[in-house]
Length: 181
Ligand SMILES: [Zn+2]
Image (cartoon, rainbow, N blue to C red; front, side, top):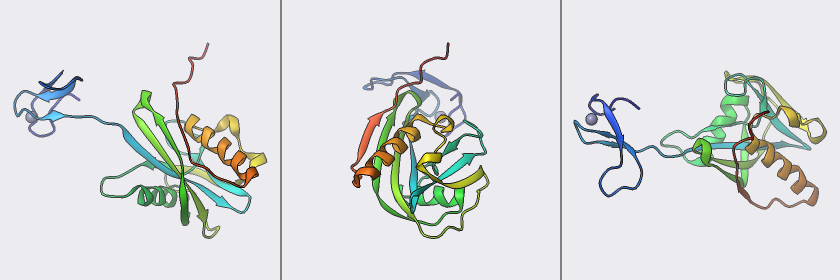
């Protein structure tokens, strides 16, 4: 951030009085611009023994597979956000069953919330930011081509839970991927 979104003056990065972390502070209007983690909401969508996967048509990870998920918008609930992303990315109408996984990803300032959901009908098709959608059985999951560690992790738990017939809540922290040699 370079300029104040209130008054347009340049901002400086410093620790405001009484605070503990550096913030973008406007010396003209004294606004303090806090930056906080963003919430990503999405669905693991079930249809019989399959789940809904989307191939990403946008960066990052263009061309790789994921479940429908995206940034929450202001003014919506986590449920509404997950339903909206699922509709936008796969034109899929679903009913949410339960909250399934929460992942902290502190190195990119994100929190993932993934719900289990049931597909209401199979009229699915790629949205504007999606190349391809499919209902994928476990033995066809492209594990090496899943876009994000959080999603790979959640799907691994999901298929393991499904074998046991119980879906407890999962939570964890995703660490940065080790640098490629
Ligand atoms: Zn200002």
